[in-house]
Image (cartoon, rainbow over all chains, first blue to last red; front, side, top):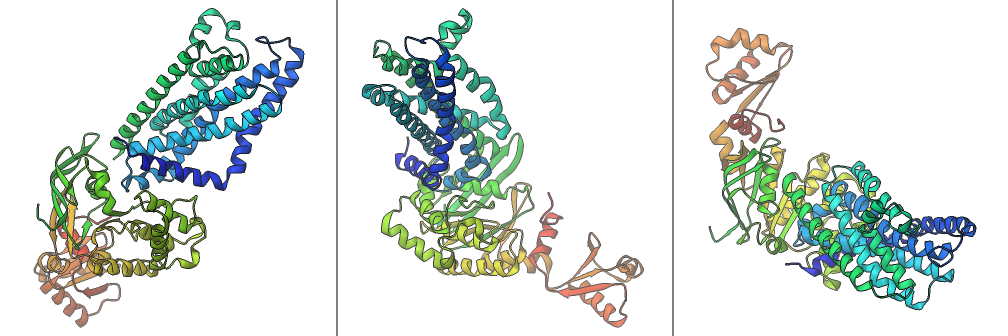
Length: 254
Length: 309
């Protein structure tokens, strides 16, 4: 049983803090990917032929939005959530009220996902200003992005639940986030990978996001439902596991 | 369960990672009552509070808070409970006032009602002038007052205070005590853990001593002092103290207690030493003759200082 009022209040607390520093936070979340987009898309792209049947800038833009949907919730669910859970003891204080740990985790998860949507939303806006995509892409992408952000928020909170300190997150970045960034098809088509690696990469959560967004971009909706379903399964598993692992963490430490 | 009990722990066992912390604990807190829980670090005070709040699950035994079984109905019971935790847990991202508002919303208090309560609590905590300041700028005493105010936003019938004045200067400590006496007068039940004997003596109706996972004794502070210690204690220390005790040992009938470099004599023996000291004062020996206190009770029962691990 979940008290959604409690979940909302946890979300709202984080939103109130974000509002105070929104501009700086947004700047960090958007300027970096946009610069990468410019450097690779315009700089490197001008030296390349069409990729995936379009200019490289357009190809990369879709990938950059996907990466942003992974990075923003991941950072929030790791570093920020960890400081609230461990350093500031914000979670412990909330648990002294009628709010339960599962509601804290769900509140954090929805907040991390919201942060992702804020960042990806800003990215979409910049892409639109660059003239990439059309109205249908800008609108339908949200379907994918909401699921993607929830999914990566859930994964991040699983890692958070197991973390003894901030250093632990480096493993997740090195072993999970970075490989996904480069192998998911965000920068180049996965067909370029050796067959065995391509087979693995196909199942990476970020690959699913990239494929779904590319499908919408190309107005090919055949595989979209399956991809969305796959993301929903990943998201539900991730969030469920995050609740389980966090409850176990708090039980063990007393 | 007594009808007026707001908290009851019965035969509670709890261990962490195979290490037993509570071994068949029995404890109850009546409505409007203040009980101080004393015990050395690691005696199980914080575990008792976690179990009482339904934040941990007992290995065996039962816990009821406001008539609700813990931890199952913890969230429901906590609607009417206030907690001042041991750790500094103010929200550093918010102002003084926002700390109260954000916390109140977890209890489903909203709008005008919430703001009115927050205003009143700012007054109660004497923080009106700091209302819009970041909590990072507050002194230790102010922070603790704000934590107390925050714990009252839901008008709790029971208040859990985990070392509410640890680390505060005497003046700040007295301000907190005054606030707590206020609350007592209003009929709020309190479970207080503390390392300060004067705090327990001043605030508590009953004092419970927790040692080795069980409550060794639980009674009114003065009753405990009278029964366990007696009417007077003489403390003797200084460079010449050991020599003096060695020389006079044979004339002193009774138990001489030694804690570190200080000797303790009780009641008749204290009177006897006092008379001797007055008759032949020693340059290298200092002494004080005083009534018994809870620290003496604690030593007698546990054989340890309160801060021992």
